[in-house]
Image (tube, rainbow, N blue to C red; front, side):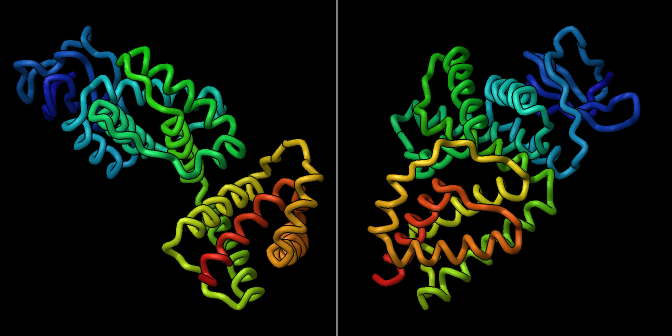
Length: 280
């Protein structure tokens, strides 16, 4: 292999035996090298063969701006996630996750902590992805001696969730449609305009996205029903509960899916908050 383009001392671009461009990483692999020089294959520790040219181009740009160690961390986390989930993730995660890990580490070094407003939902609804996120924090700590907060495990899980959705465009379209349908039921039931910029709406839409993903990918939400809490929520948020019952009926008729008690609880709380924001 010969160098087609030099990105930095640790990353070079070459082509494989099929003439396809690949990214080659290794400590010092590009040091004092030029275009056309032979690559010292003993220094190679990672080869990226990205089929999407746009993703490949963005990844090359990113590798010019982050340490090779952060890219390798991301790669290890992605490999672990793919093995744990039993599926390949969209190639774009190499960009989004690497950039996020680099930024998160820099924030901690600067004493900046960012709260994840969706941590509660992510932990309960995307348990496997959150577990992967926690494993990622362990790996990052092992390699950098920096312990990121659990909020970051939620952010990492979110990148993994998105990388799964990106592979299934019809599912993404279905998710969008279902969110619009449920939002319309809420608007009509309460005769309101939902405030798009509010935190409550952001959480509501994100919750709907999680719910729609599970519904459309047949991912069962296994959680013990809390009937006592359901009765409390039903009494406290009567109007919101009535609205959710309309949503329940709609989903049953169109998607042949029965909302669980816990799904009704969470959805009722989110609807109540969105309506309160709209009325204020």
